[in-house]
Image 1 (cartoon, helix red, strand yellow):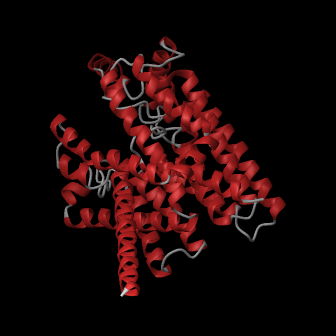
Image 2: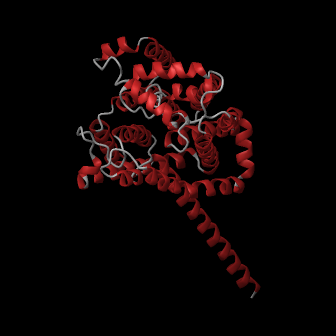
Image 3: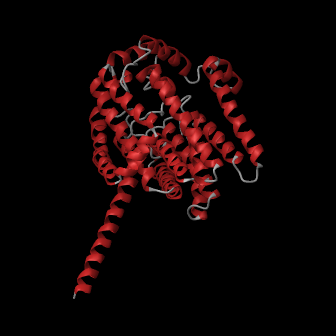
Length: 418
């Protein structure tokens, strides 16, 4: 009798554990899909040129489960989360600086709301790193990439009026071709890594890679194509077929070339664009950057508040009258950070990115090839993208979530070694 009772109690505990794990998996899947900005924003947008205030408010409701679930999961893994936060003080300091910018923001309500979302997704990054091994994390990114590429193909073929922009470029399940380009860029790199490390069924991975390449080209996003080439080159450099010394030389040269390109892009953007056969203003970015730099100098130490500048009607009207087009952001993650958080905020972000890349490199050299390559490739791609795209500190964006997760994961894997 006692054995039967004990067996029933054990079975009940097992079922509860299985249910709790399934609930967590569903929550993480919801977080990853929501952070991509796919499907729901496009359905709300429809064929209109921009989202209405009512639609934007409704879409924000999708974040409520994330805001409620993240603290609960963090409490469930309190020891691991606290250890990770202790070992990543720059991440904690960045979250605090973002929150403090509410005090001097020109739109304090907007900054407070978005700072809360930023803090929540940063906490989720810590929880993700504590919950999954690198292989398990890559598996989830693979299935996310397959889902995004499949949904984009369905929208393009079944609902071409939604899946295509007015100029004929694909936007798939996203509201803009750059959104599809970002997702395709991430998908190509993730699927290449999955193929190398045999994560996921190889025929499905190969099919997804083909869809991702198609979406990358059809989106006509030159920035995403360039970043994909950079990430692919780094992946080639880390190949086991290359001698370790040659591999180190290639990677070091790549970082040096990246620094030179960044310097040339900032100092001589028109000349570089001319060499590439592109618009010398980089599609209006050069005059926009000049205007942004002027406004940064007005508040160099504090900035205008996290994500606040562009939502103030007076500033938006000034930008429109000056440039002749309604710029939604600075089109550079680094300038966007300085605009919202001042030069100290940008310095903090650069230190954090440098720490993340350094940890990824040490993890790779220590022999954890999967995590090292995953972190190096995605973090470098993230850093390059933000030269001309404002995705660096998106409060609920997939790229920030993945980058912060990899920073913490590299710290955890390194700490396990003697």
